[in-house]
Length: 356
Ligand SMILES: [Zn+2]
Ligand SMILES: [Zn+2]
Ligand SMILES: [Zn+2]
Image (tube, rainbow, N blue to C red):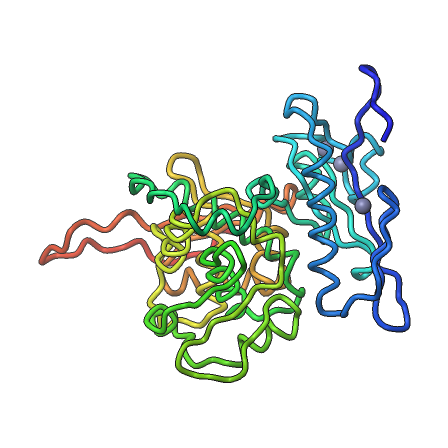
């Protein structure tokens, strides 16, 4: 490897291709000229993510030197240019129907404007740690955080990651299940979700959801043994997460009751997932907003379906109103005022409405 001179612009863009071969696709990397033997179609996606993450881990650059690589290429990766803005993040893009993948330093605005793109949380690219060592010295659990900020952030990062790692048409229930698995997995990718948790989420006994994730090559199911369902995640990107397990468990727990938004557990999974995505983007101080395209991608729906789900959340009085600013693609939503402790006379709540 050639050492970059002080004035050489460091390019933090890595791409790999999946080339069709007789025995399965082969991963080809132009940076390290890696050529893998034929991969199982189901594990190709995981291999791609692991390979790109490895480059990002190796080619480290101090934060203040990282620049938007999209801008460096004239912003040709997205249709319209709204100007670079926000922090420089690692964005993962699926191109050409999954045959090419790109990981690049991208500003938040460009990442949001690029289709098939998800921000890969830095926590997923933490330094590679020896797995065996971790099991012997478990860190003491961190004290419970007074706020849900970290849980919210962790869930938002994981939802963003899963939006790219899971197939586009993964069902909302499978996405909710995958989120719990990713946040609760041990360092070897093993996870066992307690039956009580699954019952609380109304996902108990739904083997078809596990099969959906297994079919997508995201996890491996054991032979059917109903007593204790332990699965192994095949996505290497979720194994070496920087936050410890206790922090991730707290995030997983928050995701089952994503305050301040919470639906009754009997509500359909599509509404549960939409509520969770909104809760993960709901801020304590400022107004609550996100790009419609981002909300739709995290929910695994079209923009149109997402608008319908937002309407249903208004009808269910989880939101009082929502509004789509077409010029900026921004969705703004409003929450009901916090409920006072139960009193004999409940003040009338504002009626549902959709600001248009
Ligand atoms: Zn490579
Ligand atoms: Zn751009
Ligand atoms: Zn940019």
